[in-house]
Length: 484
Image (cartoon, rainbow, N blue to C red; front, side, top):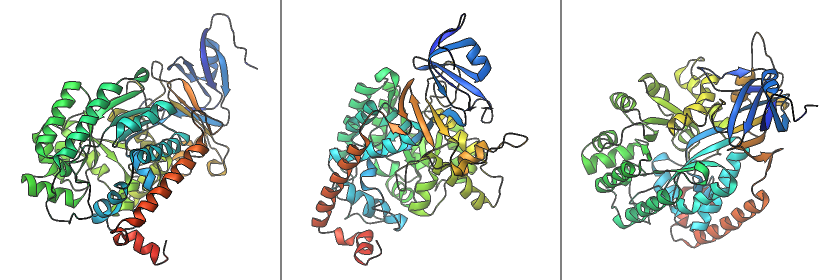
């Protein structure tokens, strides 16, 4: 038994000890085979060999992690959590209609409370599988952000600002979109209120950004206003960039240039910008984006499921660009373990190179590189004294993580990336507080939340059945034909 008090030791709140500690410090993963992490308040005060930490510190609580691994929580810098309310209702359809004739008509039937409960489901799913920091980009974020406050998660949030008309079923591909400026101003005003009310709130656990949906869905006037506000409030930006050929076409028709050219001209390209996808950027554009310090987020699962296309993360990195891993829009799930495996395996296939995207690199992309994308690498993303105590404990006793080799070959990191499923996460600590323990969420009644989400889904389904265009939805036809 470890005694709580020792002479000449510093007293802390919690010490995790006895198992692997994956610090993510240095160029690799920084594995300590038998390590310990000491936490006082919301900060890490020590991370090192177990014997050294236990000699120097005593704690109110000791958590034995023998047979387990302690590592930084995942940082997911690009999510749309409200979409979970229509999970898997717009898949297996052509990419060019996925947005305007797939998911947006369904979301148009939702009420604010539907987006909120969908988001809460999504956040719980991700929390229980190890995500501690969420880069959420959605509207109405002023309502959704309360989920993060209640559940104890860390989040960097923005409204998704666009000027899309409420009815997208009448929009046709290849035709210039008729913007509704009143929609854009309403969403912009909401984002301003969000920043003023929540930025650096809850002890710094909640931070904010501005979120232009994409160059395709915003007027130049609106984009200029968003950029000016980002500078005025000194906060970052989220956007989608060249995520589809239709986006490139719309911007070319409206502005006579590419989305990258437009954002560069307006001053968006900088380390303050997190840009998703970059699928249809040219090689020359990738070089300019990379040189600007703009961060790319790789959302392999959603891009493959929606468009069968893999983003150019390796190419962007070869240009000197910074890449982080993200889950995107819950097309399948928001489990970072799943996303790591997809990114590694698919890049090996795409490049026909088994050395491409090794496990250690994708684990970095899911932790410290995600923190860099949010400009938070000095606070989160690795286990180092002085950083915030955001960490997870993974039970390694599951069959899929067995056996364990330590030397001369260590298989811990490949097992986590290629074999783990997310259910192995046993404990989640955020800002020094345990929010998941023994696989159980401590900050809400999970069963009640799922019931509320299913109740909302029934109402949305009823509204969809009354919509005159419902039968035109591709998945509605497949359902009627007995395929779903």
